[in-house]
Image (cartoon, rainbow, N blue to C red; front, side, top):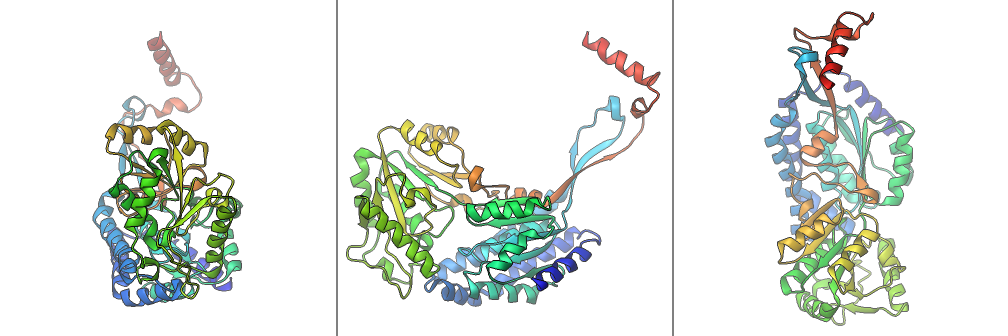
Length: 463
């Protein structure tokens, strides 16, 4: 906590200086891209240490290339984003005055990042905050000690501590982090902790961005091989430990058996024992997933392991992908975000029924609709609300650097990434530069003469 306070105060002092120029900001963004590209091998080792098994290719794509790609996109767009946004000024009142929104740094910003993408979800928001000209402190998850330590070292090797720094520590540090008077704070994680962060931030009136996950539905109109491949393949990424992974499917009742058969054929028999299957992050998380499955079995649900004979490997915390058919809504796997290799499959008899089911729950972070009919897709999108959505695929909205990313309702609020991220972490200051021939004197007492003339003219026009 002493290190955190010392770094925070140092960044506070540094933030009192002039805002970084465009060229300085472009340089900072380039440093982030170079940092991850130069440390690819170290990042891959750290991810394998934390997850027991983590595919090197997946690490390269999500924790290295995605960060470098976001930095490159932001570098390309930042000159335009930083330009003042002109706004109209009524010449009858303001004369020749000009008005614009100008984006300036907020100051010292904080990131509380999650365990599932320890580099991407720390350095991605860092890119937004640096683009906006801020100083940044990052608190990564205690569940990924190897990745968190490496992130701290990489940042210390790249940035001055009064500009960007990483603090590592236990749950107590995580609780104290949001209590500081940040100029903006971003938390990514679950809703229960998000509420605690919001309460702590409220004491200092800290502006807050929350990305909280949730129950992401995949609404299937017609079952076919490609639809199942997109849903099951999306769920297999990182063994389902992705906040925008499909959390459950809604499938026509008459096609449920076909969905199961296609899912079985998609998953290779030895998948969960291969190096492509990511380990569950901790023993506690693994035990939670197994408890969810036990509860579903005890309730009488049909539970289908897609690899015949596959078992949980506790040494590497790997679990075979498992379907649970028509679970009751009071079961844990239908009340909680699963964040693991379990996919509930609920059936419906009409599309209206499926849409009503989604709308009866909390607003999801992601929503996915699978149909060959563009009119049906548009209807589902228009009648539901979610943080993001895809048609005929899953999670792509989380991979495009041009799209602002965030939730709605209990899945979070605010946006990071893209121009929305730049604006989220900027102070949008309205600026007026006075010109000539205005009527501002009408507002100054005494209210006779010009003021009376303005009022009389306005109301005579109304008549």
